[in-house]
Length: 168
Image: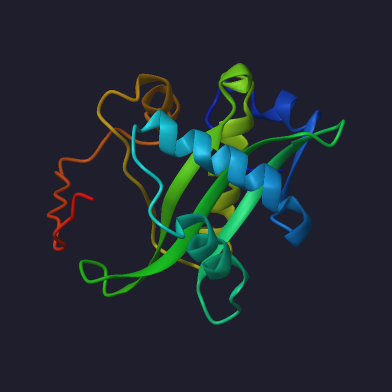
């Protein structure tokens, strides 16, 4: 059983859902959920964005994965993308949880916690020192979950565009 903080719905959720690796047959549902993730963050999907990310996931030479949370009836209700990255502060590889999304109607069910726990177990199994991620400051539902693992760090994230966008 995956370790979880006290007083969480994960143990109950684990009885009604499973976490599994994304499969080729899941493309349509994955893309629908991923589109909803973009909409949640009010970000446009980059040109060929779905195809590029899909190809990363299935490229055996790319350390980028996707797991799904699936209900007993087979419905896919969420996903997590995660990858390895070089951490110069620890002088080792670490795990970066790039994206996590659960259907709004399923939030609070423990599905998100199971996805985070899956990534934590992945990192522990590989003796990685940490799992890192970021979220928007205003993602209060996500932060309520994330804060049960560790308080937010003091680091501030910057993202400086390096391409000029052309207006058609």
